[in-house]
Amino acid sequence: MLETKNLMIRFGGHVAVNAVSCTFTPGTLTAIVGPNGAGKTTYFNLISGQLKASAGEVFLYGQNLTGQSPSARTRAGLGRAFQLTNLFPNLSVLENVRLAVQATQGGALGPKFLRGLNLWSIWSDHRALTDRAHAILETVAMRDKQDQTVASLPHGDQRKLEVALLMALDPAVYMFDEPTAGMSHDEAPVILNLIRALKNDKTKTILLVEHKMDV
Image (tube, rainbow, N blue to C red; front, side):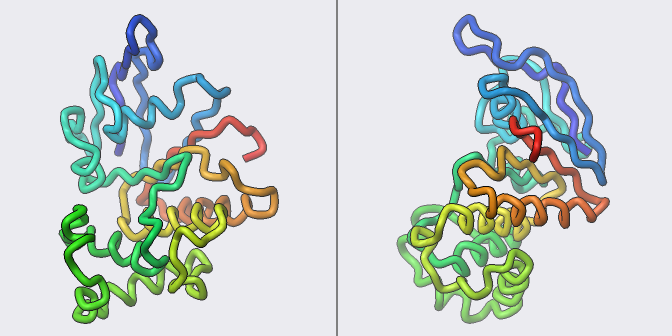
């Protein structure tokens, strides 16, 4: 499903990722484990397009994504969760998930869209998409917090919401970068259980960057 061929990046004279060739198949979870500074997140950034490779290629379903933008790679089927949450902090939990659901239907998510339009009126005619957002929030046990603004959520709930956004995009490949970073000992199992549930779908591929062996 996903393949990197001789993927490399240099920062000045320093080679951070050195000609990495890997294949990842459907129905598998692959953990990329190493200490901080080993290049794990940099490798993820090369796959998802946040960084431009110095050399090498990225393929999804055999399609070469190497020259494509991060958003184009997302549309192709790469779903990425970051070490730090990547959410719309001033919108509600439900609005965040509904925007992700809309993105799968070809909706625009640009700043002009967010500034110039009333989200509630936009969604009044999209009951099915709202129902999909509700179902995802049920899955991550956040339906009761759907009206809270994201900025008001504790860190653990923000991480759960980011998983919900990935689920809304329904990617072929889920990429989790230290998903329990910053979470308490009691919060971490919730995220891991969500990933475990995703792993049951044998049509999906999961990549997990981590430096904690217990995770």
